[in-house]
Each structure stands twice: as structure tokens, then as C-alpha cells.
Image (cartoon, rainbow, N blue to C red; front, side):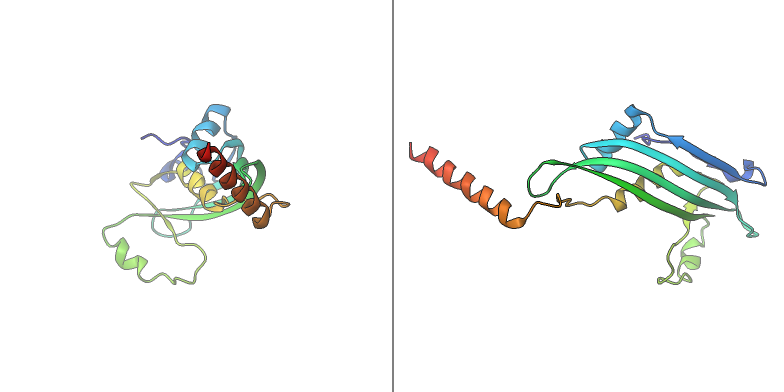
Length: 169
């Protein structure tokens, strides 16, 4: 499976000043991402980030910026479409995967906000990681502000009564 949005990064080839990525996903890419994330529509996916090498003696990369997305989902109560705009701050560190990575990961404080992401051979695909960040921020049970559980229960009761009426005939 190829990633829906590929942004390959080779840390060894990064300039000393780093790079800035300002990108807006095209409609066909948004459609593929929407399918992956199980949302009705991904109207826009905008990336504004900076990538630079870390100051570590080992190969590392730091990513700072934000991603913005506008999605349409079905309300979990009424099934009406809901549009949401998300603005997600991005602050990531990528470290080289080594055979002793598990040992070094055990030294990480679990209370720390962000664990480092792994890269292999000084390379990683930033696009897939950004899609994962978006996935975490999407509300799995969106609800329209005026939608209430009582209204949904009334609709369900009405549908059940109509179904009984149909079966009686």
C-alpha cells in the first residue's frame, strides 16, 4: 500500500538552515485520505511546517509547524453532515532506529509530551505521520450542536413503531 500523501525526507540532504514545507493536498489526495480516515469528505489538508536537523551527535530531525484540515462527517445522532475545521500544532523529533532503540526508549519519561518518531537510514516519510496526527484529532462521534440524545431516541421509537405497523400488514 502506498501512502496517500508522501513527503520523503532524507536528513543527510537537509540544508543547515532546514526546509519549509507549505503544501495543500490536491482533491484526489484528499479523497484518498478521507477514505483512509473514514470521514465523508476531506475538503482541505494544508501543511505549514519546518524541518531541520537536530543538534544531537546522532542523526535527528525536528519538525515544527501546523496542519489544518476541514472535514465533513455524519452526526452520530442525526446522520446529518457536520463540517469541522481542525488546526493541529506539529512538534516532532525523529531519531535513527538502532538495534538498541528499545533500551533507549525505556529511558524516556512516559509523562513527557512527545516521544521521538523513528527513522530508518536517515530517512522517513513525513506525509504519513501527518495523516496519523490528523486521524488522532478527528472526533469519532461528532454531534451537531442542536442534536440531543432525546431527539434521537424519539426518532428510533418512531422508526420501530412504523416497522411494527408494516409487519402487521
